[in-house]
Image 1 (cartoon, rainbow, N blue to C red):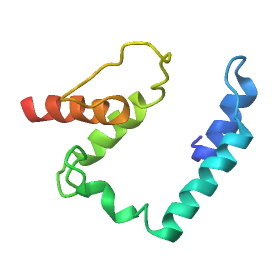
Image 2: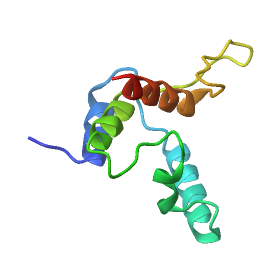
Image 3: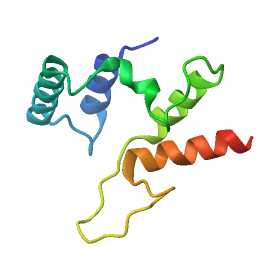
Image 4: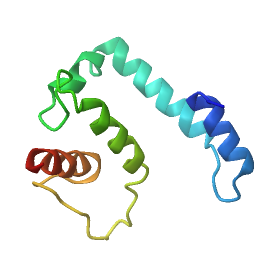
Length: 106
């Protein structure tokens, strides 16, 4: 059985004790993304243009994206907590930099 992302999230949220969907947060994010697409601050064509994202013509790009999606689940840290840095990046882009570094070495 294969579930699409929405159905997967619903199943996980229904069966999990410590996982839930923050409906207000989802709505706020959706509105923010929609506004960004309308005013041009978000452009779907910019993903592959970032230096830390894989080249879409690289045969390993799909593996890179899959690995990123598996690992990209939480970057929440306490306000005064030390944050991991990779090549000066933190959060999502630190993860991208670490994956890029690993792929470049292999």
